[in-house]
Length: 258
Length: 258
DNA sequence: AATACATATTGTTATAATGACACTATAAAT
DNA sequence: ATTTATAGTGTCATTATAACAATATGTATT
Image 1 (spheres, each protein chain N blue to C red):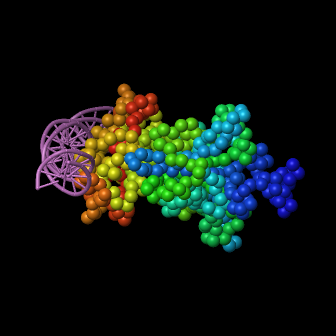
Image 2: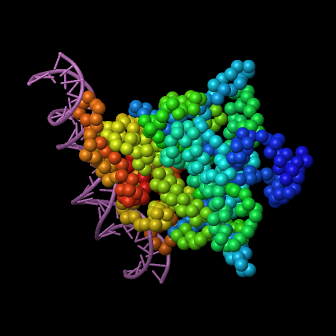
Image 3: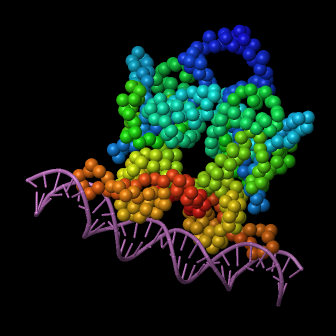
């Protein structure tokens, strides 16, 4: 008993003070993709890094240690809530990053010592998430956070560039096989909005007629008896996504590709 | 210093005696798929479980704690080596299982107490692997291990049925998009062997002519100037897989599916 | 009321991919 | 020479794809 107390005192930690014990060597990092104004964004947070007498601003993805009584999915939802104020958001684990030196690899660049992060080894589970930026109250954004253009991500801390690359790769891969795109659209949307979203994510363009012919075959894409309002041109028909129909008509595709 | 020693002594552990320190809360479990004789198998290991005065045999996938100085990929390769004697085998992480009660969920069935596993919480990273059973020296098999039919997996320990389901799902998903199937074939193989392998994994059948038309378009499938030997019928042409050509001709497919 | 504006909506054609279907070829064993 | 067992191959009807441009319809402006 004495023993345990001594150790706790020797390694004080804000989460211990809050009585929220975490697992020591596992964290979750979240790559939160947001879509708005035909642009794909990603949420990053800054930290001031002392370097050689100067101070640099360095960026990384929001992350947290896993608490002793939660699943990693709960950890990621907690991070989402903290960062965006949103709950019940789609999150998906995409890869575990476990290089024993992953927190130290960039140390030489920063000449930087932060014992709490670098003395111990932390394995992190990468999650990506998709949100519609119209749903986010930007005044809720933590002050050191910002939405960066997904196509202009610069140098990040630790192995976070690698985490970003894997997240983006996985996002695209999954989008080709599941209708995740609906997570990024409002509940009612036009086909043009949907097309622009695909184009933003895959960094390409599609022929409008061929695109529509294709998506019109999705049984879970429901044309509504409603049209766009507030536009100064011909308003487009609104559509919605029917999750039930998707679940029911979803068939695994076993035709392998050459 | 005294403090640390006391704790070590209070929690003796075979890996500590071997001077191989592991992270306390992270393990790797491996679903090793093997293919032989047109059958898809998976390696499971048994353990005797005392239950109400009797002893039951329970099954699970091979797994291990992650060592302090290795990546989880190294952990999985270590497990593969221990179980099959094979090195440089394809392994792939597919999902993290982090339910805080994952080791305890089936306790009530076994009325079983195994403090080393159940007192602490362990998050596990699931890996799947593919091997050709012809490459395995079965005399190397650890005595409590066996190759079970992948289509007849019974109740497993802990959350290992869930792990198996996710592994199989991911295996199939990946096989549709990457030529992993070559991991399960000998270096030189016939088109019929390849077809039967796909049929075993996807639990279906394909039309021979359509199948051949399709795979003949793979630029990395190389017809050899060699034919099968030792068969009492018309011998088939042998083919091999050219990894270089695969890497070079590999293009991401961004045509999304309806 | 007429016109400009901006985006929505729609169809054809040529090419490629797919799915269904059955017969001939050939090496080994007898 | 015959049997046996599997290898290897082609057609046709249907469906999916890619490339391509003109018309329709609301709001805003005059």
